[in-house]
Image (cartoon, rainbow, N blue to C red; front, side, top):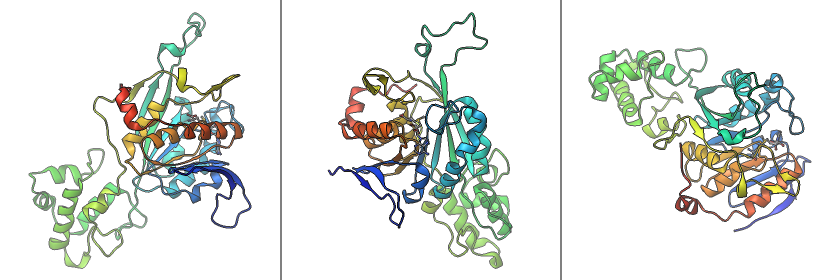
Length: 359
Ligand SMILES: C[S@@+](CC[C@H](N)C(=O)[O-])C[C@H]1O[C@@H](n2cnc3c(N)ncnc32)[C@H](O)[C@@H]1O
């Protein structure tokens, strides 16, 4: 195991930028503005964004949620550019911050999957909330919202690239075959026409084994002048394995819902010094592990562009992922490097301690 914290160029090409960087055991943390790093990072399977909330807490953070779109825009553009259809984006924020940047995410090809509510519980406001004076219910929640990257396909019958659903339907239509033929191809009564070839919200992603059947049938029985069908490159029909790679990974543990009741970080887990907490936004390790496990597998690449104390990198190391993290503030960068270096726990130790009380 090697470990180094050196001043080095994060770029392979000829830039003059010199950054402090920690790089060991597939965890890379760079002390820099992440905008200058994205193009050097490997393609992510998950991106964990825990950036500006509009509270003016770190240098450059706007004081209002009104300015969040402008703040996030260059990052969202870079994520879209470097993500693949297998990438999941997790966006931590307040509900108002998320509402503000949701249109920006959609505009850049991020499809909304679900909003998870981190419920910090009554302990978060204990002794701190005068209900006689408050004009709203005390807030004990944050959001962690899941998006996936929409794949885009060139289609001979569309002027511009189309999404997954549109592509499947239009390719089948091109064959000249009927909906009943699709059911026959998949060996089902009506599930193929009802699920895979329907327009609107009722559409289902065809599982790889069914997709293989549709593709084979189309290329055998479809009108000969339109062949090949279901060929993203225009030449070779897609395989089941390739089809699988057009969808973000997701694994939902039994009993987990979109309400995550989990206390604010405290005790030994909270990094502190003589002045108190080192970082006011430190996220619970358990929740970072939750989203990484749900959307990636061992060896996959995770990005943590706004590292803070790099809780995502710590969780990623425990779960044997490859992590690229950035933190612009020297003090936070140094604290996260120490945190990652001193990490002794393996995920097995964590499981044995039985702290996986997912709610
Ligand atoms: C909300 S905190 C992240 C907290 C983190 N999730 C944790 O558990 O410790 C956001 C962090 O992003 C850093 N940051 C903001 N803009 C950045 C940028 N352009 N490049 C790198 N880091 C940035 C801030 O300094 C801040 O520490």
